[in-house]
Image (cartoon, rainbow, N blue to C red):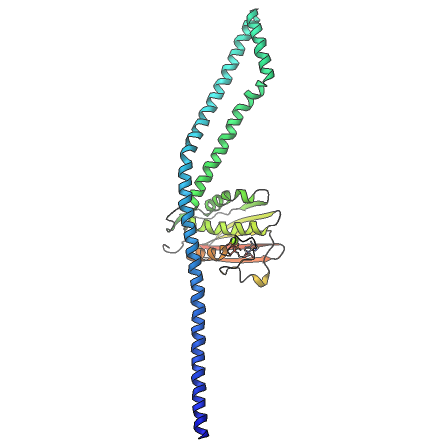
Length: 312
Ligand SMILES: Nc1ncnc2c1ncn2[C@@H]1O[C@H](COP(=O)(O)OP(=O)(O)OP(=O)(O)O)[C@@H](O)[C@H]1O
Ligand SMILES: [Mg+2]
């Protein structure tokens, strides 16, 4: 009787153990699908974000390009006119001078009045400064024009294709977009090697550069350096992005690539920059590595195959 009960008990225990194992397996599956879900949500948020930035950028660029075009062309004309006006004033001056030399009294009086006006209104300075002002304005407009172009390229809509692209162009235009964040805080040094064009989706890689540059800027407290070095090795291109920021605690280094991991307390950082960068680089058949020393700085290394992988 006891024997039977014991056998029954053993059977029940083994059944419970089996159920327990099944539960653990299900639990693991759940954890995995949860992580996957988080990744999918993150990718979805990021791609929606990029798509709306793309639309916005294209719209803004389009709206601004037309007025910018005619302001630029008007300033060009105004520069020509300024030169002509300057020439005209000099030729009047010459005419007056010859009349005065011939003893023409009314001309002398008029000449004196003009000289007085010139002095009072600092006309020598005005005539010298006028073309310079126009030139500076032209330069400012060229910069606005370049920024619009960069914005447009950066967030190009329909960025799903891989094409042969120059990584240096992508890095430069991303840096130009960040000019405001960098100025007075970060000194940028570039050591560009002889790298070939690689088959990639440049606007997606620009997103990687942007995330890494932003992290560098945010890691630097007052002033620091951001260095970008590129090199070509066999079938790969490497981009080293290093900063002299706060560095990363070795115990946290394995966590930084996880979605939603962030040590920033400002509230705008979602902890998605690096995980997004990793998934984009993986889509290109490459990888990202990190080396960091707390208090000294961090270096991220992107390794990208020259040939890329088939269309995303
Ligand atoms: N260059 C760096 N120097 C120091 N710490 C870094 C650097 N880059 C990343 N980190 C650390 O890794 C964490 C994760 O970076 P990630 O870019 O994924 O998220 P985030 O910058 O916090 O937020 P988000 O990118 O979404 O704005 C950061 O919060 C920071 O602790
Ligand atoms: Mg970030």
